[in-house]
Length: 263
Image (cartoon, rainbow, N blue to C red; front, side, top):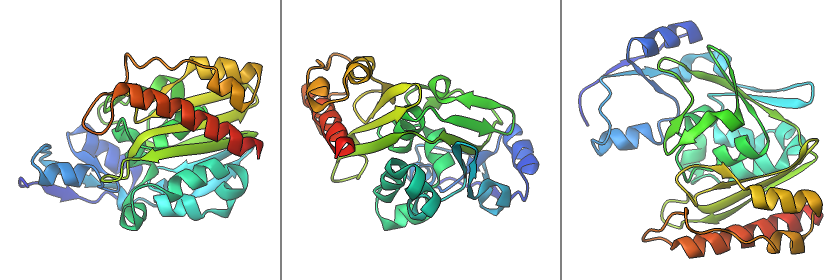
């Protein structure tokens, strides 16, 4: 690991000032610290966000659950508020990585990093969440722009994410055993505006699946999900799974998601 300095800002304003000056925000560190140890990342300065109380917490605002960016996975999973209103999100958080990862990893860190196999981005996209930053609010559909890339500007810090409460939602994850990331994860949400389906792990970036959404909006049945042909041409093909296998997993996991929601 290369040498670096570590600052511990006490306010969002202080953190934003450090980030604007070139400091790399440190959330849970589950991705950043590992990449630094492997010398894949070389930030000369880190701004640890752990000491900013405004970034932690879960509350209800109208018909939405707002979760602070520095809220740990285990706290999302264990929240009675999240369990009762968006159980699909609580279940997703409960199965991220292992116990140590869930004790340190944060919602904001995962979403800002936008790993193509991370779980949280699928929930953000499928639920039509709004990402709040120190500068603005960003709709989920506009936030994820590509592999490890987002709409965040330099110096912009996620402060919280607002999740509209859906009618029903569920996340089905096919785990890559070595990393416990999603080989394929499918998040299905029935919202007031219709069904939204987000896929993670299968491509270069989390994405919605228009075909599954159209079919399930017409008829929310397992057969309807099964009738959708999944195009494998733009899916990942690597040592863990072929693109055709991932396409099949998307179909299978979508069917399982619908079956679970239908009881």
